[in-house]
Image 1 (cartoon, rainbow, N blue to C red):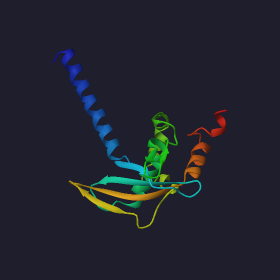
Image 2: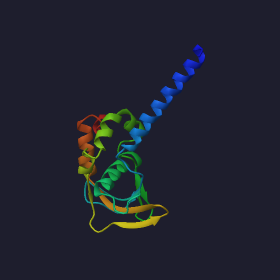
Image 3: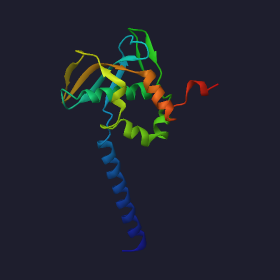
Image 4: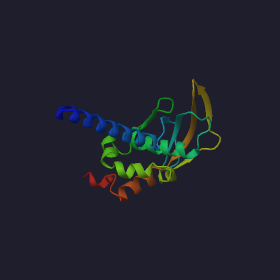
Length: 164
């Protein structure tokens, strides 16, 4: 083998390894495939959202919905024309998620504490079979004030008073 073919072979092996590590990381991602929308007016200091998780299971664990709701409130925002709701993402934009990727990976993991800032509204679960998957919808209350305070105390989010 000449130098050029050895280099190409080595490059292909490295690309393959990188791709396999990237795939492993995605499999361990604790934020599911989800959709989020407003679900009405929550109590003072909280958001009431409807979270639909697309899953192979027809009865995902409540923690899955809590993590998805907190993730949606932080990075996607939500709206609902029926309730005239439109809420921008609490974290501002996706650059915050990329900038603090290590923190958020732990925060949204199965043992992380993202679920501590959300609670399931009783008897709100709806399950619809969609092809091979299930679309499971639950109403979740997210404690936006507590979540914001926690993230500000860690320096993950900038406080409102730092803008001026």
